[in-house]
Image (cartoon, rainbow, N blue to C red; front, top):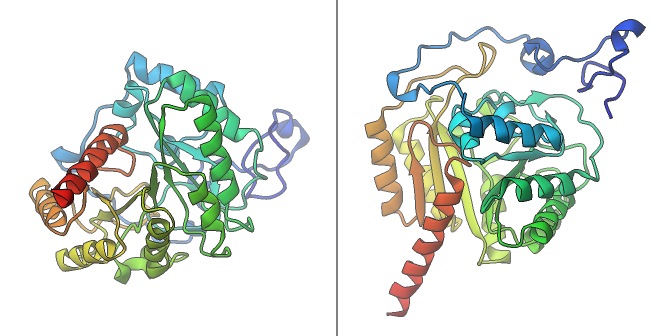
Length: 341
């Protein structure tokens, strides 16, 4: 049930609020969606090249997926982050669920998810997510979340409950999670998530370390790297995955160093995609990386030992995740067979 607004940070609006004269937060208004960015100087949004443009979603499959999401009162990162692939993915019945609300406690300069004080966790959300996964008939599902620095465990138990609910309702569905960094939590909270045994544990590094202060100021590069390494140490059977954006101001040598850091942490799957600027208040696009340069990154990454690499302008963490998981699993089996031969 929507709640009465207590401040600009409140997310939902009761129907009688206008009559009562109370101010509310409208997430469609940029200054209210991103209050931490309101003071920033506008950055010009450059025209997108032909290889980055996509068609507006209109298919029946897109509408059917949208209806299921709405019926179950779920939030998707597809919508909140303004993903360019939403039309293609939703037309195929694929949506990335975003749990723990739609308001993040961080204010990363690249991200379009709203920043502020989140709502209390919804204890029924894991069940609703599981119901939607079942209704969509997903073979593979991606579950992500906002950062919840307001919670003692960063939402680790909520992730675990959601994984267990999906396993109960759809035992044949493989589960990929894209988690926060749990930076302000006890190290033990990671065990809660790992013990729920997701098939893929994803946490994005997002950019090169030299840009963290500007792009991801609330995070720490080596903490995120170590988080993924610890997952593999706790359960080597879980695939680990991470991704970065390019076009933020990094150079090729820095990208390749991130690849080396990831492999040192035994990360299996790397994604690289073009950064797209959500609004003039967000971090500027430094340049649009060509498809040929993406292809060179892919070749380099495979050469460094990743089991799976997706590097294209439109690559996002959950783009084609189901197909990629099947290829990832096959790559591991092929590698094991080669070792045993």
